[in-house]
Image (cartoon, rainbow, N blue to C red; front, side):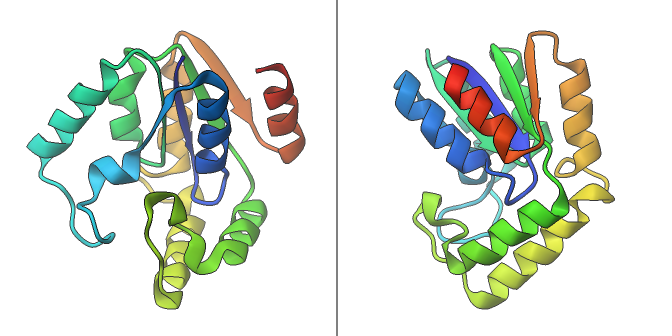
Length: 166
């Protein structure tokens, strides 16, 4: 299984990746861990280090990549069998981010401060209208250009139905 999952913060990318990884015995690759240096979200890795990490991980036999970085996700798509886009409304993402609070990055062994949580919510709200790699239009572009299996999920019911058949 080689699957890429993209979507806004709070859309359920990490949650879905974990469940799919458990079922398929596949490694989960968090794009945050490739992009950011360990210990926080304020220092980016060098572009050469990011490229080395992408290149070394995408040759593995089974993986599930998840994250908001469309430019990094794109690098895995040439080896991917499936692209899943979690295209949830802002209300759903916001509720989930608020419920998680400081647990927002617990999948990476990091605790987020209250200030960090507020900043993440502000940043995630802009997903629907900003430009760049970490926005809805970039994810739409990935989805429209991917030629293998594409799945767009926009509700919890659709995610559960997908998991029931996956």
